[in-house]
Picture: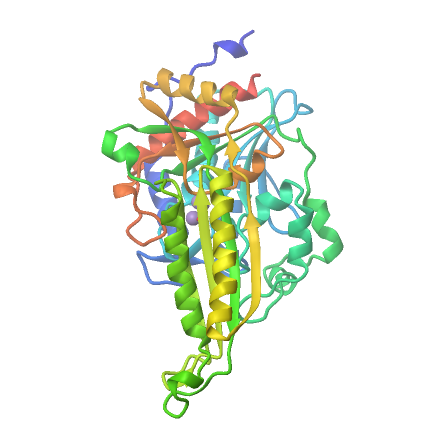
Length: 428
Ligand code: GLV
Ligand code: MN
Ligand code: MN
Ligand code: MN
């Protein structure tokens, strides 16, 4: 057929480089931190402005825009066989506190631009092409990662959790959603669930967030698997008291229990003996948080990951045992030990991987297979659709900090590979 003759050559793939540059800066301006840092938290005023901006870009690209109950945003380009499951691409635009301009962002802007590239080239999709902007990939506000994609993938567990959670200001998920223009009720959450095979395929473009592509001078990474993430929320409670008057033998300091657990996390991770096991304590909060008051409550959040799920689970078990032992030894109460999520890894579809590799080759771009150590919405899209991810290099592998950077040339390479991949998948 005519379709199968479609090619996007290095010369015909015209990416609007200046437009992309402008869009990245514009999006970064919707931030609660001073630039170059970006802070954009779920359902905040800045998130709402950024969402409005993304919808306007989708409309400009001629996409039909819709939103689901929790604000996953979809922009569709109808194919000639619009009743077939569409091909989708997208990522997130929420940004953790004091992070950068590229994480997630280039997967959303890049997918919209990939559609623009295909339109300019005269391509006619067979399967519809859809851009998805997922709600809250980052766990910042409610402690739960990938809310949008996890719910799309049908997580009843998440639907239940969302009914309970509050943020640091004691605002519920539903109140927060309502204030952002999503007046949902508990019963509406399941309306977000998608059936398996709703999509023919899902492809996400993302910065590598690691140093390999840059170090090796390779423009395109083809993700074969995503490592298994987990997070744990822990509270210790003690009696607190006056920092001068309560003598050391009489104390049960919740803060020291948290500090000891943080060191135990590092120890258990290192005991795995494998470089792929990682663990981080990124949150420790002490109550009442006064220099002259013994902490009576300590809250800590633990992130641990591995490409091997069993090895990751073994670390979680050791952390649990340590938390119990530390509480006993210090005479504090372990009032909470909650595994917030303990997700399995995800494998890319080998057929999408092959398609991405072909696309890179046709565009004269070297590629290499690699593992994603960071998690992505793709981890959950893989539960309901064949999945693939395209990585591009980023400066020194920096991510989740303001120094995060990818050049528009590098982004352009990724957009081209994405565009050609989407075109090929659309014709399947
Ligand atoms: C998501 O941003 C992650 O922590 O991998
Ligand atoms: Mn991130
Ligand atoms: Mn991301
Ligand atoms: Mn991520």
